[in-house]
Length: 215
Image (cartoon, rainbow, N blue to C red; front, side, top):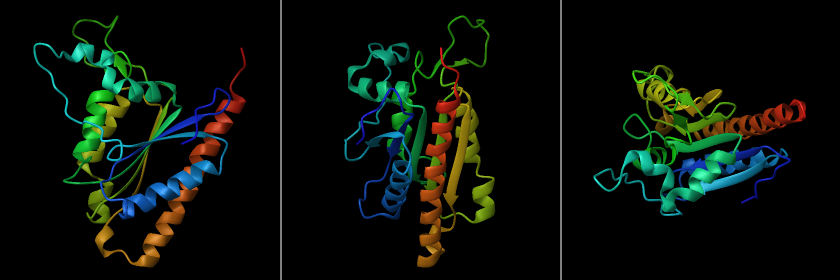
């Protein structure tokens, strides 16, 4: 894992799969290689390898408004706060994020970090999205046909109710549909495109940082 740098854009890669020999692992490897072709600093979170606890507990002593103070997730909140972009790598299971990844979002994308209603009217529906200026990119596979993948309601639900809600400036997906029916050649071509797309993300972030006005 590369340490974040104050002079380079930082990309947080969040990987979610329990099988180190899965195709999703190959997707991760190519994404990392693409990012490392650029001058970005890369931080990797392997949720299963780190034994991340995805269970969100809310009761009389564990309140949602205090999630930004939970010590066990402090590291993950710090990573999210300092990154310029988040790259998620995962399979679609049952039309959405794996439970482990959903739990990561539940416990890390918390009020005061990812969004805030402070200063908003009491009847406000939308918060102040605190992730403004950050990017979110999603590399995933699914077994649904291409048309279903294109209009996937699970994707659009997360797009609007999580990532746009939290203010991410760029939210983009890269997916391979009908995975079980793809040939080795098709998989190899898509893996090459993953590497190219990841490198493009890194180069674009570097350009933004290079061209940003200096104080």
